[in-house]
Image 1 (cartoon, rainbow, N blue to C red):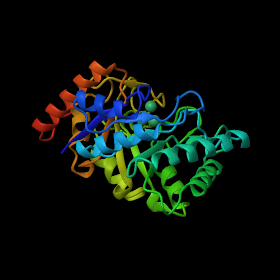
Image 2 (image 1 turned 180 degrees about the vertical axis):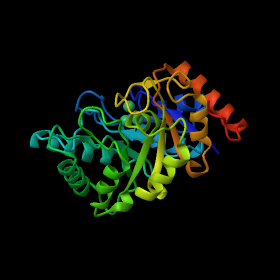
Image 3 (image 1 turned 90 degrees about the vertical axis):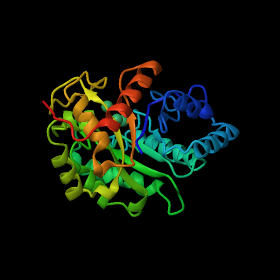
Image 4 (image 1 turned 30 degrees about the vertical axis):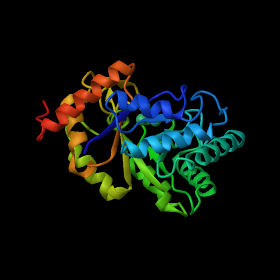
Length: 284
Ligand code: FE
Ligand code: FE
Ligand code: ZN
């Protein structure tokens, strides 16, 4: 079963996202829990949340992903920014506990010149403050392109953060195909090799979700500019191989392509169709 969806706006509320996802052929989705550029969260409506809970169960959705705000930086050089990151993270996790069994994905952060070693410790510290044995939400560290001083460009960096966790079972990884390619992993030609390396460095059991994006730039560019499926350096056949790879079977696949709802609906239909037909694709 291919579980696929796209990033949706939470502006219309929680239940509305579930219904919108169904209407475009999705059985998972991703959203921010608050305005992605700002820190303020309007208090979520509990009835709306429980309506979404019931809807996702009735319609047999795969786990969905709440994405942390882009402004959150767990490894900032400013203690104030790190404290703000803690407040956002803890606040969002409290909301997610009303939606049991789903994922909270975040960008590890930017070290702003402190170096990755210091950043890895700060990120693990934030997680160790926030994660509890009782929680049902799994937090996901996203693989990053390495733009600027971003942490999480290599599997080794993510592995070192995970190794520091007191509750490692509460954390996993979300790979992003655009970010992997931009970070220098050749998604177009070497998916098998990338996944073998992931398994060796982190362990495939930690891989919980996939962001499916094409990239406007060539591998190793460290740019992080997403392209529509088939319109970038990775290309449609290689992305279909991601969706159909045995090591990734059953994971939620989320599109973060520059598209409106109609465009995402088309991409979901295309990817479902190509994945159903696919044996292994030949990559030019
Ligand atoms: Fe992201
Ligand atoms: Fe992503
Ligand atoms: Zn990105």
